[in-house]
Image (cartoon, rainbow, N blue to C red):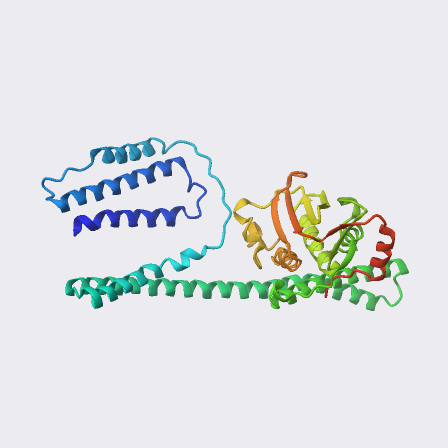
Length: 403
């Protein structure tokens, strides 16, 4: 029994240790680790072969398969020789755990239960019954323990999301609200001492801050309603040049800081308010985390619409490329309170793209070298020869921030 168990205990112990230590490591596909893993596999194969030889006869006369054992020794020795070698680590995107990791703990329990029932009611072997019963109880306890750990982790995750939501609301609304209260107080205390230009400037700032608050509230309401699951769209044909220019203006960016590449004949069947929300969120991110240059590119691939927002910043670190689409995820700035942001802008972009039947993706910008966020909407593009009438139609139905 000891001879049959110890190779698997070794394998389990080493596998668990490597998973725990290397799961988030940039060196998990290191060549040294590959050699070490090969050595482990060869060692286990050699132990199992020796066990099988001894079980069929006697362990005194059993001969190990020396070729496999020598391979294991060579792999271990090779990984030791390479220990001081400089190997550059690769960064990998963090992803949510796959479904099989949730189901896997239940497979042994179900298998044990089936075997136990079969041995009890078909074979009727009493010794097998006791062994299978003990094994089933053990696996059941392991599954229960795993579920307890998962419940604790889920509770901690929910608490973290709730704290993030409260912190987001208080932080995001406090900044524009402070500006509104301050400028309104100045206007009340002025008693006509300010000239008309100064009053207009203050009123404009108050209006901009109020628009920021309305966008934040709209995003939070959208998330509370389940993001894009029940999102209602008001689809119409919209000239994309007008939509992009209006989005740049509403976002508060200087027009000269954003280059626009869009055909004047390009139109799209979209919800103009929601697509403006998408562009504002992407432009705000580009201004907040990127450099001084931005590029908005809108093009048609057949009947498909492609919207890209480029910047010349540092881009998103690879480990956060998938996580940034989650709610309240701010990537490398998740703990940096000096950088503003709620972490819900990209989740809103993804929800609106999904409601239009499209997708949203991230890649490194081949144009400016920073980040590039792409919204792909299949079957939404249209080319029109006369855009003047279309522009007049769009102007008659003014596009405003969604509230």
